[in-house]
Image: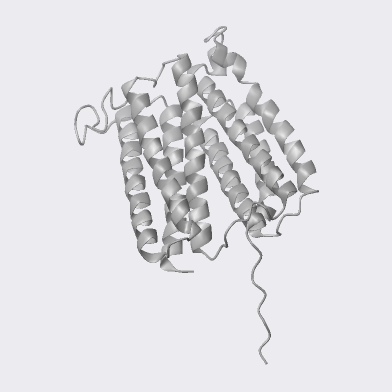
Length: 295
């Protein structure tokens, strides 16, 4: 594996860490830690680091580093990879996605859709932020895949398989989006707070995510027995990760959604999404050329 490919995998893993930091900001109600100030924090480049301010500032610094890492990856790919390579396409999508991350994050801060805000606008912005994050992870995973020797994707290779890949990806995105809404509801209206939240619409949306997750897992199991997927490490990891997701989700509810368990659940969700993207790429890539015998 080339150094550039290793760097691409590192950038992917680093961004997963940044996502977990973002979840920590939301789960601890630290989104207002820097006030209505962006990209500075409390109007300062380096504020006094304590409490919510320290958590939010750490996330902002990590996000800035992630932005620079993705830009550096794009420059390296553009200089080292020939024209027509799909790695170039993947890294361009990664750049656009991480710029989108920064813009959505800035909008959330400047509009003050943070901390105890229960507005409909925040309910829309939070899952939108997560969906954009999934596109970023997919772009980085595909870039690393192509830099590691993965071949060009052929969407006409198997139309049935292509349909399953699209439906499965859409299902995972929908589940993730509803999960973001559920996590927001758990943060704003903890179940151990009694009647807090009353009849707020967020509390009534909680049930959608687990129902969708169980349904999608059942359909996915049924479909996987019929789809002709490449037997790769990513493909074999999928059922394990789905099982781990269902288990961690159940434990999350039983334990009263503690912050640490929310982070574990999100980490597994990110790992499942990345594995799905890689398994799909391996299944849809063009066939390897058959070597001709010599003599």
